[in-house]
Every structure is written in structure tokens, then in C-alpha cells.
Length: 415
Image (cartoon, rainbow, N blue to C red; front, side, top):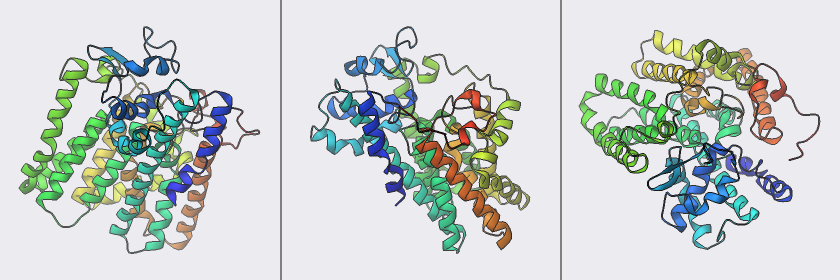
């Protein structure tokens, strides 16, 4: 059902873009272009080199960096993505059957380009829906209240960036959120085993390869395993190390150095110029970016963190440290605001963590307070529904401290 709702306006978006000769509804940001088109190259040509469709993609960013679209880099192996490509690899199986059946033979036509975007939307929605389903299982693992678990999972699916960001396009956030959902689910298994910690090593390794900022949560949870699950440390490393070697090899192959990757290759890795006072206040209180207005029930998560830290619940203490440290890292990034994407896009990866801390408080609320939270859940779903249907998952920077992006527009978008 979640997946159906995510995709319900897909035919409308496709038809509008086809009629207008645009891509705005189907491709919510140029950032997602490499991972949206990479499966096409992998399946049809068996390559990571975008040279064969370079002219097609260049129209999305005519100015680019020295003439090259900012989302591509010219290297010794051709034009490669300036972003990690694991999201595209995750999407490839969903592209496989339509492409093998030659339903999209080439990309010289506007309609065919949009069909690739359709596959991207479907892929993103599938992984977002899987994350929502796993989050429900996480809630059930810590609460016997099936109805409350379902209510809060509906909020997670439709009242957060899971809906307005992760389900809309093949952002790296989409796969990061899915991976962290699975990670949290596995962590909450009471039974320890060699397989559990090897699998956790694989998941955390994938999280870093997919999005380098995932290293914060990976390092924090590695310390948890080192300190309290040392018996399984070797098995954890067996999961991590092969992926670490793959990461180094791919950096060397694509970007010419084991310590380089797409961000540093285009000189973006040094742009840690964000102002914490600005970013942290916006993450909490900005009408366009802040939890208070975008997804207010998530504010309970900070109370949940305090509660678990006070009780010295070891796993949850490390999860709280990882979440807070990750937000601080993102807040220092020059584009902490997520450019013109809706809401707090840059924090969507970590929704499973703040979500579960919020649920830990929610499940113990009295009926009156629970009623208030349910009202806020309904409000959050309105906010993200409006963002998807009317704002096309966008909110411009100049609206950071206005209520413009929360309002239902006076007239529908013409594009």
C-alpha cells in the first residue's frame, strides 16, 4: 500500500513532463541524474562511463564546471559520476527487465529519457517503502502495541522526508536510509551470532561506500562492537574489510587515487564552511528545514535520547552519539540546507535513528499527549503531501525562514 501511494501520481508527472518537454516533475534534482541513468549504461553497455550518453545528460546542466555537467567528472576512464554510484547499482535489478526487453532502446527522444526517470522513481519508491516496512518491524520489536506501531510507521512513511525525498528520486539518501533501517533492525536482535555481526559489517561498509558521511555512524557503532561485543569483532571486520578494499580500488580506478572520490575529485570535499549556529538552528526551527515544522513528532527523539543516555543503555547511547555527531558533520557542510530540495534533505539518511528514539517516548505517552502527537502526525503528512504534489519536492533557499513552502499554493504548478 505504501508503494502504491508513493507511485500514485507518477502517471500525472510523466504526462505533464512529456507534454511540456520538461523533466522537472520526474527528476527532482540534477544531483540524482548519474544514479538514475547509470543502470541504463550498466545493463546496455556494461560500463560506468557516461560518454555514450554525455550529450543527452549535458542538457540538464549546460554551464557545468568548465563545460562539463557538475554531476560528471572527466577522468582517464571517461566521464564518470561525481557522486558515489552504489545507489545506481541497487536500482539496476529494477531496470533489468524493461531494458533487456529493449523497451528503452536509446535516449535521443524526450519520451525515452522520461522512461528512464520513471524507472528511477519506481526504484526509489521501492526502497523507501522497504525502509518504512522495516521501520514498522523495528517498532514491533520494541513494543507489543501493534496499532501504535502502525500509526507511527505511517508517519515515518508519509510525514517525513521518506515521502518527499527518498521516494521521489534516486538520491543517495534513499539507499542510505534503507541500509540504516536494516542496520537498526539487525542491531535490535537480542540474540548475538557470528552472522549478525558479519552482516552488520557489510551493512556499515555499504553505508560508507554509498555516502561517505555514513562513516560517522559506522565508526561509532564499530566502537560499540569493540567495547561491548569484542567476541564478534573479527566477524564484524570480515564483513567490513572486503568492502573497504573495494572502496579503495574503485577510488584508484575512477579518480586516480585510493584516497580520492567524486567529491574531492571535483574539489567539493574541502567545503566544510557551514555555520553551526545557522545550520543547527535551521535543522530545528526553520519553517522550511526544521523538524519543528516539517516533522514535529521527531522532536520526541531528543527526549528519547536523553532517557536512554540517563539509563546508560549502551546500544542506544551509541546510537544517540552517532546521530548527533552525524548532524553536526552535516551542519558543517557548505550545503547543509540541501540546496533547493524540500525540508531537511541532508538528514533523511538518519530518519530510522531519530524515528526509533521518538517512538520510545511515544509508546509510553498518556492518551491526552498521544492525541496531540497524532494531530502533529496528521499535520506532518499534510506538509509532505503538499511538498510532493504541489512543490515537486522543492523549496528554494530564500524561503528558509518563511512559511511559503508549507502553504498550499493558490494555483497549481504550470510545469
